Image (spheres, rainbow, N blue to C red):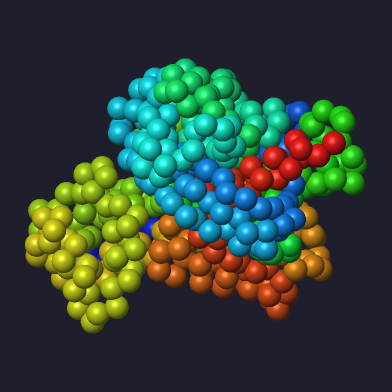
Length: 448
Ligand code: GLC
């Protein structure tokens, strides 16, 4: 291998993933422009979907069943709200969604969900003699008509069940529930997972005005003044606020490199969810694999081994493990590679692999920080108030260094004022939050 070609290639590679402070600032006006467009009928890459709910008071009380659909598992949770800012999960059951269901017909999918709910009802002796209110977290872009109805705009994250786009998902689920004899279960609140996470955060902390998911996908919601939501039909009090699901995964003003383009082409939704493909757990591993395959092809890594990484062979969880290896000879990485059939590796091979993972996850964190800062400065340009940001998702929770890098980048952007942005983990927020929203909706219906 010629040394000069090797180092100049690496230099170029790392540069193509670099996000400087200037670049983070440069994203702000572009993000704000897309937010502004999304709030009007014109629309743009940010869908800015009204959620028909504002923040909870923290006093909501009762036991609610929450349904959570959006990743590879469908979950049913029983959540108790104590009226004092505490939401406790009393029972939870997970059902793995088989690939045939994810990619089959919508009816098959909602029947699978209804059947899983039936199992939960039996296992947990849920009383089905009286009407029960349910909250439904549906983690996809949907155009809500009100708090309990919403139309799927498009599938994201590898879901593709047919006959659902353009349909009211609550009606579809209610039809399936009826088929399974569960008509007493009434879905009275529908929310995106970011909105659930926000509600979970705001239930505890009234300063919470942003909810974010960093998981299989990524997205955020925030609290907007009704006067600014130009596309909303009249009939609201101008002083009121409403939560807006940004659907930031689809932001399309970021510079893309050759690996982003390659990755995008191989997905079920090419040219869509550009930012999500740079940040979220579903894509980071594959992005790293594409870079690695290029290095292997150029004989810059694993030259003594017949290495081949086929699609899916490097997952984001593997990257987590690789980055967490702090041993001198990178033993954990060696183990992972041996398991993948790559036996003769050098310490510098393993080091390079670790650096590639760091390069990709750092870019993800810095783009995320720029997006968080854009949302907060949209609400509060001078950062004159405190903002709590509730965050849920495995990437944020488990990826080594991810949250620290976001905090670091926010400091780079705002100096001492970055302290006014408090990032908090809302563990299970996407599940518990919708129970809180169901309580808010129930109270609204009962009040005159
Ligand atoms: C995808 C979905 C979005 C969801 C996010 C996190 O981006 O489109 O609705 O909030 O994933 O689950």
